[in-house]
Image 1 (cartoon, chains in turn green, blue):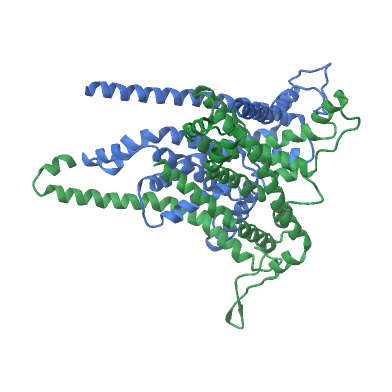
Image 2: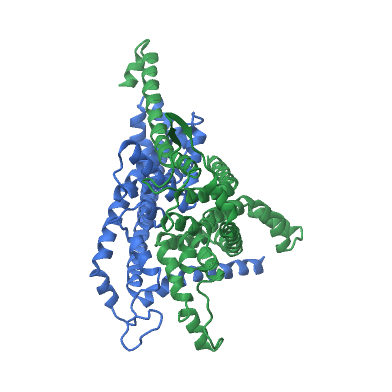
Length: 315
Length: 282
């Protein structure tokens, strides 16, 4: 219909305007609906957490002091810094933050050291094997995260598979205590997050121009030197993207340290959860969350910039 | 050159073994008769007793049914919202609020789950105080929370699929006078259908699997499967969970195999159509 209308003299502009009008209204809906949804269910909740972190706990529903209280008929702004003061005076919190950062950093490094050669091997294999290998990397991600972490309990515990095998082989004579150690947490995180490291690395390594390496070889560069001079610097964006995808969620990890980790040193995600569920101290739980966010805001923004650049490069 | 290739390939094999040994061990021990789980009872294994126990466990069945219903609702809503967001980000150029939308769709992917869970619960509590809805927490609040983090993944999947196609087809349809809704239904939607399908599956899996966020926004009587499993395994290994894991691995492997075949078939048909179109033009 619109096509016919355009054939009429003077009709083209009118219809064009009409199309543009509905188009802009439609556009506003397309951008507006998801934006509104995320504003209400993603951004506003953070503001609420921020606001509650400045309250004090009280025995009521909800269990925190209101933002504005009425005293002698006049509104009074109630801002308390006690939750934050508590956070920085009790050494439990500071040590949990430091421990979480350490665990996340070491796990990220292990993921990188294991994931890089794997991604490299996939990127350099033939087209048919490549899609099979990628599927093998992604498949565990589709099975339950919780059950895959749980599987490690069976492997690591005192009468678990690893100890039984080592005892049988005569390598050890007494079972090693592997569960509830830092080692178990590293294993759990590396195991669960490895695909998140491999995929961005692979996406980067796959795009590399192999003729550069050939040129380097022709000029007499040893493979290691060619790798260090050409491949490694070019793969830097992939390294950063993969590392951020592992590091950021690992800092707040809850399930892995709860199932596999130490009981004497908690990670901060567990502290937040305990503060909320066990102590019912919503202001302190909120303050814990805000401080985690402050620690992670730079990595998160860096990740978003990389992600944006990646999607724009795909165009 | 060769030695490095060998090193990388060895690392790949070792890495894959590392990824699959725990899953295989769960499958093997799901057929073990012993209650000790990791001690193989050679005399009376393999056995299906844990599978029988599983299908008679009312608590697990009820939780699984709730999880399925929530995951279907969450995945479907997340696909609608995520497709809209992906369209906007990939096709609308520099619109007002673009940076905000882009930021809000990538942040949930890396955000530690305890923070997302806490913030959503506090939102629901504040909303109930303010407007009296939602009444308490339960299946509805779980679904709302799941939609929110799932839509971020769908957005990325749809957006990167759209970024891979240029806009010439859509522009041609527009030039021929097709209205935007028609352009979307006839051109864009068929192009991004594989992304929508894999986005839905991804969202379903994420919702089905989520524990941490769900724990925050769940109420009494709304225990999802991961919550029941977590409360069981928190205090040690239980053999029927191995049986559950085996069933889930089998289902996922079948699902992945079917969707891979389906997508290959679609791609091939598209290529054939393109070749036919090119031949017809000659």
